[in-house]
Image (tube, rainbow, N blue to C red; front, side):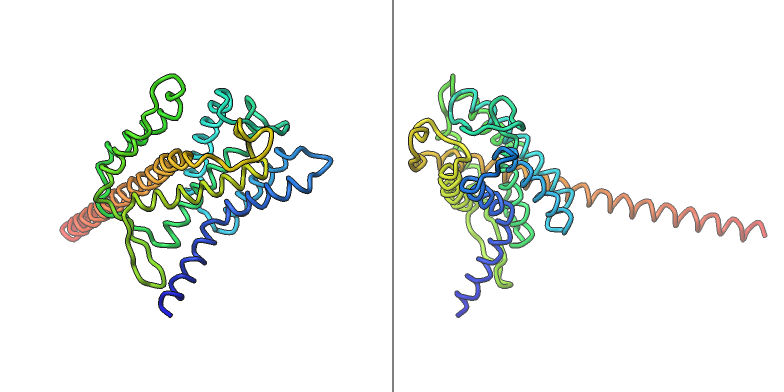
Length: 283
């Protein structure tokens, strides 16, 4: 009974976390089978993503601080998409006006939706990270991973070296999450892998709906190569490191501002007390 209660709560929280990605997938499916004659599919998808983002902010599902993180992921993803399309890694077979260098602008929202999921998961599951590695090392591995997505086209692909480094760097790091008022934990590296696996499944659905096509899918759809899980494993690490570091920095900044406010209030109190004593002396 306890297991079912926790499973139900876990599932419901996951559904709420996946709201933005779910809307994108529904839009991909609907626009594939029910196209509109007066607007191209990619442009319609962009409008749906923009409207979804506005509504999520309007009704408090996401905050403006989270929006900044999500837009950062949009830009990171769009930059990666443009490069990969130019290198022939995959392509967008459709057409549209909101297209930059062969990449429809809505594609950035697919990366943004991953950031939305992570930000929402921090709130829904009250995520807490234990033994987070040194910030310099965490950001460093993040930059190396992102760079390798670009450089492996003309330099040796070091993804497996990076995976080993990630496993070593986060060997002692655990993520705590709350389900049915019970705090549980798992190794963060395992969380990376689980999220990467489900994104891989989502990628198969997205490519089936024609969101993009790999070279071997142009003639007819086929499942995405299982090796893509390693790419998503590394990409989700970038996502979580960025979100975790920003939250950590914000917490430090908030503590500094709180300390500064207390010091300012103490200074004002001392000054007021001094002036009060001076006024008594003058009288």
